[in-house]
Image (cartoon, rainbow, N blue to C red):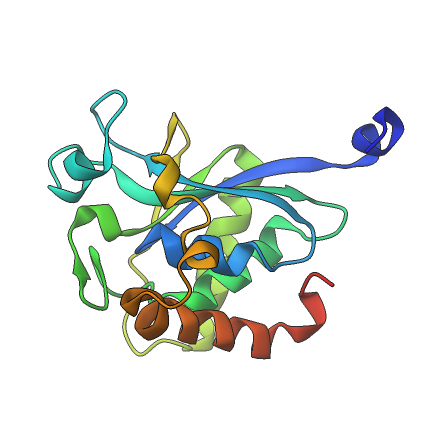
Amino acid sequence: MNDQQSTDKALEIATLGGGCFWCLEAVYDDLRGVTDVVSGYAGGSVRNPNYREVCNGTTGHAEVVQVTFDSSVVTFRELLQVFFTIHDPTTLNRQGADVGTQYRSVIFYHSEAQRQTAAQVMAEIEAEGIWSNRIVTELAPYEIFYEAEDYHQEYFRRNPYQGYCQVVIAPKVAKFRKQYVDQLKA
């Protein structure tokens, strides 16, 4: 990429938690306009946490993805529409069999505009009655992101036949690809 191309992009960052970060990463990797997805941890009180500490549920961190996206191709609102499609925002501190605060549904907003958009999208989804239960997604200011260990990055892409990938992640990716076929990367 030359310097002119890089300055033409309106790159923004979104930090989202919706259960296991492997699931979110696998989906956002396929979304047109997304330039990078990194799995990690946010929202806790311990500096530089590792996976074992986060899984113990004692650090306060959530498993999240940090999504870098070109907002001239895909908007923050569209990222959130995907987000609310690929996880259950009505279950407090759990996604399927993954239970604990580290698996909470959370949007860490990077700006007032992101906070307002997230609040509006959540209100619209509530009003539409898409979910039978109330949305419990936490909306919190972004503070710091800790990148997860290397073996967590691109986990689904590198381990497509691993059991968890086949049973949990693959169906989410398939649902996303079917519903958002016109927004997939070529």
